[in-house]
Image (cartoon, rainbow over the protein chains, first blue to last red):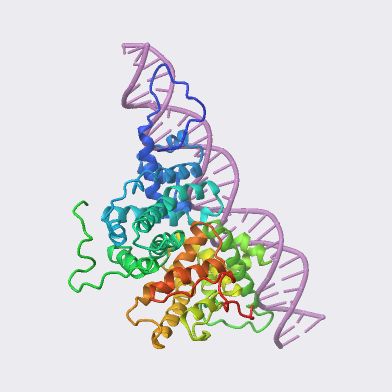
Length: 225
Length: 225
DNA sequence: TATATACGGAACTTGCCAGTTTCGGATACC
DNA sequence: GGTATCCGAAACTGGCAAGTTCCGTATATA
């Protein structure tokens, strides 16, 4: 959902063409792609325009500056990905956490992390961008985790004393560091290792004993995607 | 330790002045400061020169390009900070971990993390810079943790089965995320919360019961800085 | 069909910054 | 003291990218 781009109530032209707002999404998607690849400073308006098969002027007709286009593009990522209101309930915390590890979700998180990395050096100097990143990337991810842990508390699986705020950040932090700093892949095995080796112990749960047969978990991989 | 700046064996001038290599450190320190504040792309050679009270030409007499100056500056941070060969042994893993949490060390880590954040978007496109960051910032920090855990294994305090490689990354990852992404302070309380709430449980240790009197820990704060 | 408008593309202006050159002054060596 | 060399300061060059303007074309409305 792009932010309001026309400042005042748009006087509709009584003749001719209207602004084609369907192109906005293409442009924002192109911006996200470029951001993920080369970062904020490496990104040029020319790159975004050509990737969206648009003219540079078209970009400036809709956004007043590169900075605002980027803020808008980041905000646009909010809608995509996971929805904290419809989390599948597997009956156990480990089940819930492992259920989050699906190729589609991993891929989405990967892209968001790369975008975040490309914006890292700008975050500290642009409160608007920092806010956009927080509400589009950081908070949704943390919120999902918080709900999963709260649910585990509610069903009596883990103690109500545990520091949910901190533990919700374990997986996001470690995946970000792994991908952006050490440049190693964040794949299913790594995510399971974090769940079983760090997150579950932190809430006082023992992970299941290592199964010599299955690589990761017997019932982790589900049919959908 | 700056890398070799003169390419060939330097023919010493038989008359006049020699190059004043004592200024190298000032310039590299200035570069680190600027990097921490505005990042790679925000940094200009002009900024570095003026902060080091040097001329821009002086910078280019010693480093052939901005990129190599930055790689050298990052490599220079390696020597500072903790030394993995002389870690104090408090007799327990928790004691060792808490002993790392000293104002001087926290401040040093803070600076290194900010520099890393300012270089984040460049890492993926410059293997040399990635290597410099890894060997100056990432590896030393991880190595210290690995030794502490290995020592705990050796003294029989924790199981030899635990995933040292992964757990060594918990604190670095979470502090980096906290400082660079959520922009909240990495202070003593936060570090202790990670140690007691995440790291120790992950290796199968129970943290000491909460002491209603002390804010953090009874014997954590030591005399030396 | 006529027209007003948005479109893509390309030329253009402007400002910044990497990197270079020049210069007068300082300093160590002979 | 003479001289070779390094220094800091400042002027300069060249390229690149943000942002603007212009133009021929496409298209939705009347």
